[in-house]
Image (cartoon, rainbow, N blue to C red; front, side):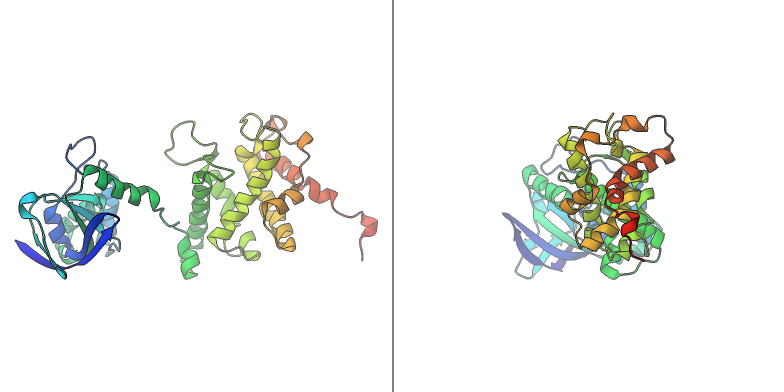
Length: 346
């Protein structure tokens, strides 16, 4: 069966592409998946399907949701090539004629969803079609989508729309987003320092749950960040990143930062003590100076590089006491800078 669609032409780099809307049932009738390392055909770049991911997408679709990003296909049937004019594209709905470059899990989710609700077949989706791509071209498109385009942090919904239904969820999402950025950014002082659920053994030193537990209250409405009008994702991320950069610079100077047996800030109690100092003291001091730069934070902390706190000094202490000891080490300069009591004005 042949169908006509109104088409938009575009050359993406050196690859001609054709974008149009299709019904779900139309795309389900023509697509197939070529898995790299399994199917030795041109354009085979896809990963093996995840059953749990498909199930979640199916539920998402059945709840009435749709997708605003396009499904990218590579037409491979030489016998029934699409007929393209300035305004239209005519396609024969032939089984296994279009290879999926991006969207295989979403399409598999649609296949499962229509089994429970056949009306989903009539929904519109956006398709971008290319013709007879080589494996190299398909891989370039796949890598562009999956490596060059970073997903937007989930908690940015709060910044974009100003409201969230569940403030607890927002602060947890925001803390997770900040942890992920600090972990993945090569310029971060905590690059590859976080251990996410499912991480291989030995990867990361700070549990994600440690960071989220320490940060979720300060990130809520009325928490330390919002009190000082640090409500955006970028501001909050910068404050945490600059804080640990300031600490790291002192420890790098003495070659202690990357020594697991010496660095107290890459252990749960030390990390928690640092965050407690940040939200209870440092943010206030930086706000007074109208500066959250690394240099400002370094001047406030003012560690003596010849007397840096090490993990050895926390041995034998319980978690609560260790956290307090780290916080006190960070507050030491604040206390030194206070005037003598006879200089107070009353």
